[in-house]
Image 1 (tube, rainbow, N blue to C red):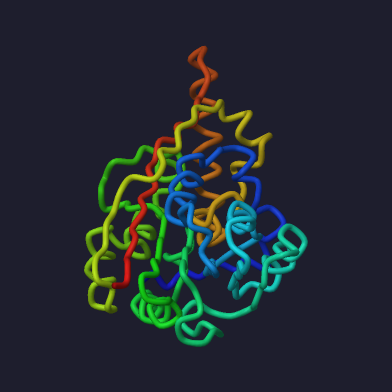
Image 2 (image 1 turned 30 degrees about the vertical axis):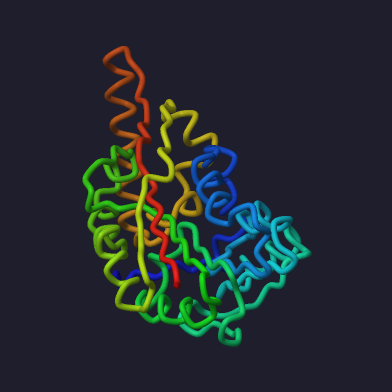
Length: 258
């Protein structure tokens, strides 16, 4: 796990910008398929952030809960999803009794947890028999992504390799945590091409846009911005324009109890 920690209290106000820039329709479809049509009695999101994904499932169960350690993020979630039961807590110590939920999920959050295997054990504890855990996130070990963040802020690539596990690793850890079986699939492919001037105007070149930028030091972030400005100037001098390429995949890994 990477030693870089994101202060989400500091960046909570700008966090939801990502949802105006990308649809994440594949993530939504994967999540809804995981929840299923049977109206489970209780659903828990761990690392619920501002409540965006809680809002997608709030009508699918009579009891929907979220856990989030950041006070700033949780404050926004309470406004966005007032019907959800929200608790400030950490993934490694869930404040719920054994066998409380039918589904537990986390989206783009697992890489922030301090102890992934302890979280898996906690998820198993709070799940009822036949329940499932879903996690969705990047797998930089697959080497399939092309992303301007990695290109112009090169430190982020190694940081991600340290804090994200390969999906095959996640399946093994779920098995060791007591899940009867686990499966992985590609949940979404996020693709975009945006001129760098528009990217600056849209707030993409900002620390709050993605945690990859948030975890950088001030010097690393400033150096990346300078690379972008320099590359843009070179393109302009040559009579062209600089486009920022986004083409990365998000993978779903689910574990199920007997």
